[in-house]
Length: 188
Image (cartoon, rainbow, N blue to C red):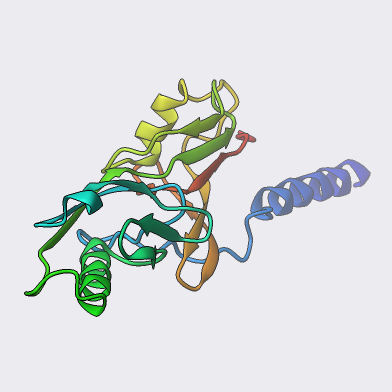
């Protein structure tokens, strides 16, 4: 009878230990549709303004979420989409009356801010983001999983408009620029 109780206790402990996780209380990760990408510190954009050659250049979004441009000075771009940035630059040009007609502004992303990967991968660290990145491709960039890695799920920390979000996703989960991917150990 004592062996039966001991086995029952060990079994119940094993089951409850497997069910508990440090990842409890996580939210669902938001997805990113085409054209919804929002700029953040570390992104680099190329701006072209027809007729105002001194403004045509590449600009890196600083820690304050701004870019500094000649003739119009500082523009806040953190959390804005490319069309919103084009509109903000055009408004600043119009406000300063730098051109007679409505300014023609074009902007595009030159370089995305990096993503970070840590835990059970061969080479944890910071890597350049490429559009369409998934967890599998991010792990490949980091040299692959270690022999003890959980290959079925990872935790991603992501900055959104409402703050920092932490969620769990599988190997085909979408990775955004600035994400931190945590690959944990597998217990089985």
